[in-house]
Amino acid sequence: MTTIHSIVPAGDKIVLKDGTLQVPNQPIIPFIEGDGTGPDIWRAAVRVFDAAVEAAYGSQRKISWMEVYAGEKAFNMGLGWLPEETVSAFSEYLVGIKGPLTTPIGGGIRSLNVALRQLLDLYVCLRPVRYFSGVPSPVKRPQDVNMAIFRENTEDIYAGIEWQADSDAAQKVIRFLQQEMGIEKLRFPDSCGIGIKPISREGSTRLVRAAIRYALKQGRKSLTLVHKGNIMKYTEGAFKTWGYEVATSEFRNDCVTARETWILDNYEQDSSLGHADIARLIDPGYDMMTADQQSEICGEVEQTLALLPSHGNGQWRNKLLIKDAIADIALQQVMTRAKEFDVIATMNLNGDYLSDALAAQVGGIGIAPGANINYDTGHAIFEATHGTAPKYANLDKVNPGSVILSGVLMLEHLGWQEAADLIINAMERTIDQKKVTYDFERLMDGATLLKCSEFATAIIGNMTT
Ligand SMILES: NC(=O)C1=CN([C@@H]2O[C@H](COP(=O)(O)OP(=O)(O)OC[C@H]3O[C@@H](n4cnc5c(N)ncnc54)[C@H](OP(=O)(O)O)[C@@H]3O)[C@@H](O)[C@H]2O)C=CC1
Ligand SMILES: O=C(O)CCC(=O)C(=O)O
Ligand SMILES: [Mg+2]
Image (cartoon, rainbow, N blue to C red; front, side, top):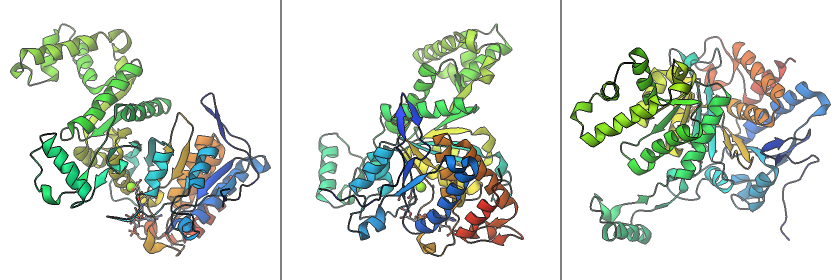
């Protein structure tokens, strides 16, 4: 018989019925404390969650926390790094929350964080990035940042398909590439590590579909597909193509692509323009194209003008704008033209880079929340964007804001909006009072330096119903 190390508290399971979460008044929610600074942060954050739920609902609702083990704590208990019982608990109880877990660099175990996402098929990594008034920022207009990153969470180079340089396996793959696939471009084949980047139609479309649904529900203005499709044509380029396909096939009435806006705008300015005239205006190289290319663009113009009943007369201006940006310039423009970005859908690695870079603009990784979600099964694990920050472990020092805000996302996911709002308002008030942890204090004049636990206490003190 397998021994289960977690103590199951009194409470009930969250279940998914007809596509909707059924949340009991005392849901059992598994949590992983995390490595490094994880325990400090978790201890602080859980007090905030409990206080908010009590302030919002009195004795009517309460979360029954159930500790499950992973990372160093599990390993030291002799359970291995990611025990099966932990994965089963997240699977059984549907909704959970976790602190950061360490991943060694260059060798050793593969990421437990990524493993959990893959094992539970949590295909969306949602990372909303917004500004809290008073937070120190390196940019001039941090208040312009209000974006939600939808990062594909199960594919890309995070699939972990790679072979070490000089290994027999790497050599075997290299021989296959050279002999069977005719690849002659490997610069140093004798000492080359190899990684494989799978990007699928299913993986891309379910991610973009979720992002569009979110954008429409939230009344967002645009969705940008961020990719490096000019270089990685059949992975990142395909992601872009599939993204536009989902938008125009499944959400036709609700969205408009950037190119369609150019066509519709030109037509509305001068309805006497023929297809070729409009094609020339949207593709300045039109006259140098082959006849086939020209006819393709004229076809696009024709197809777009067929949308006039639903999109004409300026109606397109109120639709969700679907556009795309190549990843390198996107990283610059999210900073220089933040207002032009709203929801972002992208693949795993781009999303990882973008989420830390964007967090910097609104005060850093100390207040960068996240959620890993499978919208079809209802499974979700909430976690901060940051890692274990090991140099600060057990100092009661770092900002618990990211895990607290991840908890806010969790409460919203459960439909416990009142508790979520209490936390947001109390955190805003606390920052406004300049009572902050070291990461903000070092950049703010006249701020009061609080420990991790004290910041949580200050937030609780600022909760008013
Ligand atoms: N989802 C997860 O569990 C993740 C795990 N990791 C893992 O975490 C480990 C450490 O990764 P590393 O690259 O150092 O990145 P970290 O995010 O852990 O830390 C980098 C820096 O970010 C700042 N920081 C991090 N957390 C906080 C916080 N709560 N409050 C304030 N500032 C914070 C600190 O900056 P400063 O030095 O300026 O004070 C810190 O030195 C690695 O093993 C990595 O694999 C990484 C990312 C996500
Ligand atoms: O799993 C890890 O160690 C890093 C993951 C990460 O950086 C992220 O998910 O943002
Ligand atoms: Mg990251």
